[in-house]
Structure formats: structure tokens, C-alpha cells
Length: 312
Image 1 (cartoon, helix red, strand yellow):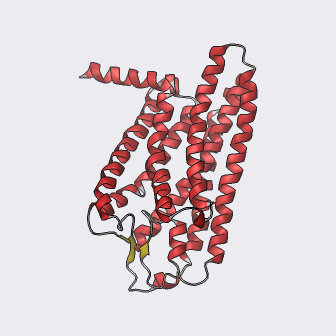
Image 2 (cartoon, rainbow, N blue to C red):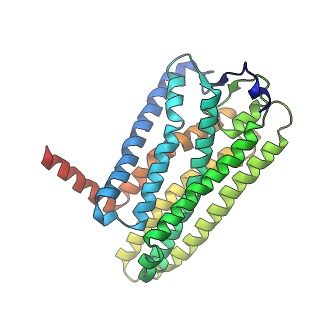
Image 3 (cartoon, helix red, strand yellow):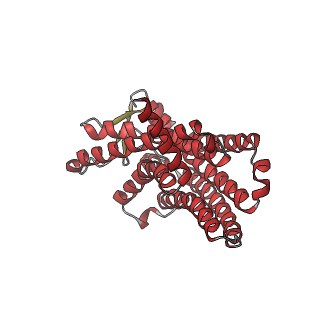
């Protein structure tokens, strides 16, 4: 860990938008509002998926996994962001920074894989409807979910291990809202070419392979949907798959911009806003997208609210 091993090295300073102090309270309010919506939205998805028997299907099993992931994803970074925006203290301990790094990398890669799993679920539902329940049985669902979580953990262990080998030479000011690999590489002294190569290789793999797989599966899905004779059947299929596609493009679009585009192609401030987008906004809008576009979820939510009112 080079400079990080020095006993005088206490931690990092997350700069965020400290160069624009007049905006800090505005960002605090916006991020807090987004975080509260994220908690409510994703907890609601998890709750109704468990309580409503009609939603005990593979699709909602994976949607609950996504909601759980988004809850952990935001909680690993947003409370620290709010703390740093609230007052003059912008620090994060070395242990806190490394913990945030591990969790953020784990859950980010997990979402990459989970979105592929959800695309496979939609492919089987639309293209192999008669065999859907036999193919997507509970055992297979748990296996696919486990692969996603373990695959994300493997990415985290790989990238974090390489990042922890960096020497920071006492440098503490991380020009970002959170401890992420690109910002820590920029902070390091010495040769970082290996770290940059690992970062580019892992990010390219976790972007190109899953996204290509998702797009190919949706190519087959579109062909199958167009063969459905009834307009209502086609509309329902497109609505269900459309929600997933919107989430896919939001997640991969921001990830590609943040990790794969050359740094010179965008300003540092714009890069920070992209960091906020995929760490704060995307987890907030995911449950909204699935709720607003899905009659089954809206129906389950109305049923749950109706029961709650009757008990009052």
C-alpha cells in the first residue's frame, strides 16, 4: 500500500464540490431527498414481492435482488456524502474509504451481471413461455442470483487489491464524492499503468460482455413479440421488457461515460455529476420505472395500501 502504510496516513478528504461551497447545501437537500426516495421505493418493491403471492415469480425474485442491491449500493456511499456536504469536515477514514471501495465495486459489478440474468428471464418468458416455469425453477433462480453476487465480489477483490497496492505519498484530497478507483488512481504517486490497465480491462469486460448479451437477447425477444397475434399481448410484453431496457441503458450509459470514455473527453465537474447519477439517481429511479410501468406491481401496491387503511 506504499504511502497508505505510513502511520501518519489517517485517511482521505473527499472534495466533492468543496470548490463551490455555495452549492453544498443545495446538493445536500437534493441527495437526501433522492436517498429517502431510494429507501422507500426499493423497500416497497421488496415488501410487495414478498407479501403478494401473485408476485412470487422469477421476475420479481430478481427484481427484489435488484432492489436489495440498490439499497446497499446507495447506503455504502450516500450517508458519507451527506456528512461531508453538511459541514466543513470532508474527511473519510482510510478504513472507511477502503470499505466503501470494496462494497461499491462489488455491488456495481453485481448489477452488471444481475441485469443480464433479468434479460435471460425475459427471454425465456417471451421466447419459451410453455417451458418458462420448468426452466426458471426456484433452484435455477437462486443459482443465477448467487452467480451475480459472487461475480461482483470477484470483481471487487480484483480491483480493490490492485488499488490497495498504490502509494499515495501522503496525498489525501480525492477529487470526487466517494472513494472510487479512477479518483484513487489519480491521487497515487508513482507508476499507475498496471492499475489503469486492470481498471480498463475489467470495466470493458463488465460492460461489453453483459451489454452485448442483453442486446442479443432482446433481439430475439423483439422477434418473438412481433409474432404475438394480439395487440394487447404485444403491448404487455413490450411494457414488461421496456422497463428492464430503460434500467439497462441508464446503468450502462452512466458506467460507460464514467469508466470507459477518455478523461480528456469530459470535464472533471461533469465526471462528478455522472458519479452522482449512477450512485444516487439510478438506484432511486429503478423502482419508479418498474412501478409506474407495471400493472402487477401497481395492483399489489394498491392491495397493500388498502389492507393498511383497513387496519387503521
